[in-house]
Image 1 (spheres, rainbow, N blue to C red):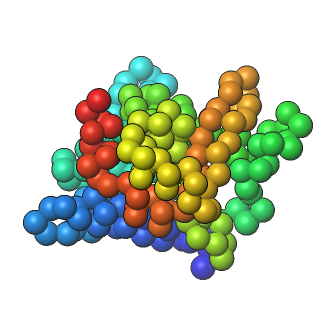
Image 2 (cartoon, rainbow, N blue to C red):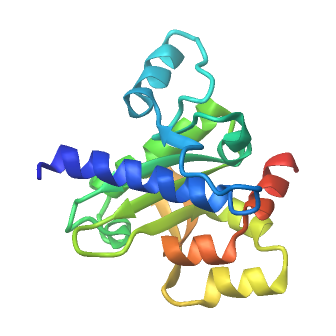
Length: 196
């Protein structure tokens, strides 16, 4: 399987997983609420350069049903698959040189800003590893309002906090497994955050 087809399969799988999680409180659980955005957000990026907005097309995940719009109001989501040697630790010892993680953070933060989302989310899976969720720290502070959620967010392994330079800006974010994110963060948490 080529790198591109692995990435496409991962994007489809994550969209289905997010759909099932998001619809868990609905009368019927569904796997079709979210899907890959047009050109993986490329269309929105190109239109933004011309001063135009593109509803629901920022990042890699789009809501193809209006019931999912609050997730994307809360987060612009970028997906990355593969890159076996690319880890967040690259941000700590890069010595000012550019690396993929810096590029990813710049991309997801720019997409979130263009979309007008409250925060950003990066979901990445290295080969033969579990999918990880990376969230900006500002979002985590709001989402983890209850002591139980806060405890799981910041102290349930594997969880890590990063405070790094990205270009000329400081970036703070939290990393945890996708499994833990879906277990400890409810769609209701996210909806409340989006509406706040």
